[in-house]
Image 1 (spheres, rainbow, N blue to C red):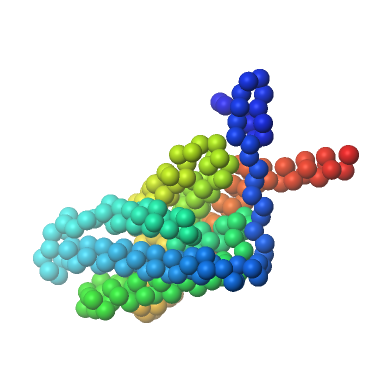
Image 2: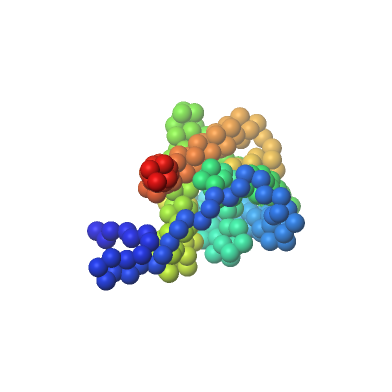
Amino acid sequence: MVKDVEVGGQQGYSAKDYQDPPPAPLFDAEELGQWSFYRAIIAEFVATLLFLYITVLTVIGYKSQTDPAKSADACGGVGILGIAWAFGGMIFVLVYCTAGISGHINPAVTFGLFLARKVSLVRTILYIVAQCLGAICGCGLVKAFQSAYYDKYGGGANSLADGYSTGTGLAAEIIGTFVLVYTVFSATDPKRSARDSHVPVLAPLPIGFAVFMVHLATIPITGTGINPARSFGAAVIFNQEKPWNDHWIFWVGPFIGAAIAAFYHQFVLRAAAVKALGSFRSTNTM
């Protein structure tokens, strides 16, 4: 294994100087007057709208193509694999398109980055609001274009599948979101970006693959949330009892998973607590 050299080089080995960026302030009044701040909020709204529009249409289309009442082929349509590709592929595309502006498209991702002090509290709140509104509008467009199919085939709303306990569903959402947010932290780590120039370019790819793999594993359990805005938008437009009864799972699970991923990356992999303690000790011994 190659030993990381954070600053300077030794014995003829040269590495790029690197220092962690300062943590984002809890409240930054200056960003409220910046166009880039509002541009990012608009980007989150539009990206989440497009995400829900494409993915919910894929889910409804698959159910329509395999409907036994229509004597459809039970093995027809895109299948679970195709649905997983739709979610993962759209995240890849949208993260690629918006990475230089925001690129969250998920309240759980935003929450995890907030806990790691990557974004301010104000930006976190407004991102989540924009994401939820975008999800509602995306599902609303699907219903407007295909109202009969939307209501008949469940509107792409998440709910706990029959035969699974609440604990199983909650665990699936926690672990699935952990995988996603952990991947986001790793793919966007500024230290890796400084050391390896290809990392920022490839970042959308592992994030999209993480969404794809998690969907393969958890679609049979919860329909796969791992994105509270996705679950919320579908529940609001579909507005039936079953999705609302289970809806808390799709907020609590992702937020817990995101918090664990933030802690694991920052304090275990990046050893932030150890570095801070070492800095404190060195300051007091001078």
